[in-house]
Length: 317
Ligand SMILES: Nc1ncnc2c1ncn2[C@@H]1O[C@H](COP(=O)(O)OP(=O)(O)O)[C@@H](O)[C@H]1O
Ligand SMILES: [Mg+2]
Image 1: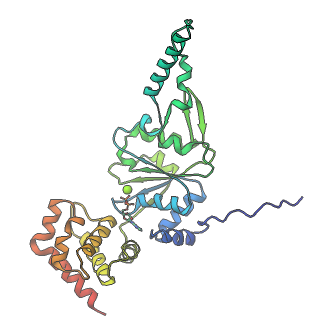
Image 2 (image 1 turned 90 degrees about the vertical axis):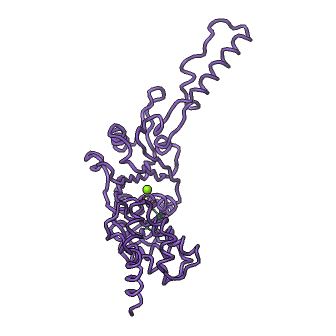
Image 3 (image 1 turned 90 degrees about the horizontal axis):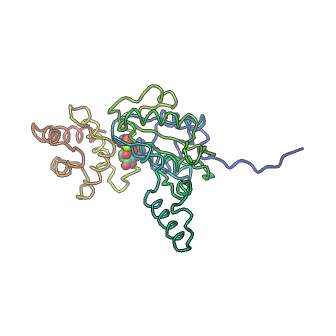
């Protein structure tokens, strides 16, 4: 018998080109390599592990993906010492205590003196559970897979990573008092790392991996146009060329895309329509965040030379 089901709702991410176009609609510029990684991770239901220097757009991938897929973003920010109680679930001890006291009082007042305590099992029910991001993301009640962002995984320790590995292999969480909860719609998982330490092979193996490089000149220009549309074209071009050149210098902390955007924004706020040495200097705190780097840029006229170079290169036809 013919089955007259309605056609499947078209997903906006049906091909690599779709990924590029859809993310661009949300002001995220993905090159083909990254778009392919996203496409494959989605298609093959694998977590996406993104590594790269700070500020190259790792976290933003998850944010934009959630918006593009019109689904919830659940974020777990990792840090040293993160554990199950802060990442998965905890019991609401205060509420449990109140419940036990109230039950005792009720029993006393009704003269029911059989036993002065509440039943222990009563306070380990779902209403006393504090749901943390990982439990939230696996919650079977979601009718649509959320995007689960596990951000800056390199900040957590190996123990937590081992726990994650287990979670990402069967998308289930066991709470001894309540049983095992398995995700009906496994979340779309994006993990990021700034590589302050190495993520273990076992976890890498579970994931689709992509290293986000600093953007090329063309890509960074496209990002800047998308994110700071109010900036003059000349200024935008000069700023991008300047930052690209600056990254080639020996700095303690090279500026990421976030800093480029911030610097350009600051220059626009100061009313600049072209890059000048004085303007660059005034807004430099948006671009460089370490005293050593600021000193390096301002002493010995590095700043002046770079501004000059950018202006002459770009004024040539
Ligand atoms: N490819 C990109 N397209 C659009 N914006 C980008 C891109 N890469 C970085 N950005 C911007 O730069 C900022 C930093 O990105 P973020 O994702 O926080 O970096 P990371 O997580 O790698 O440190 C964000 O505000 C984001 O808007
Ligand atoms: Mg980040």
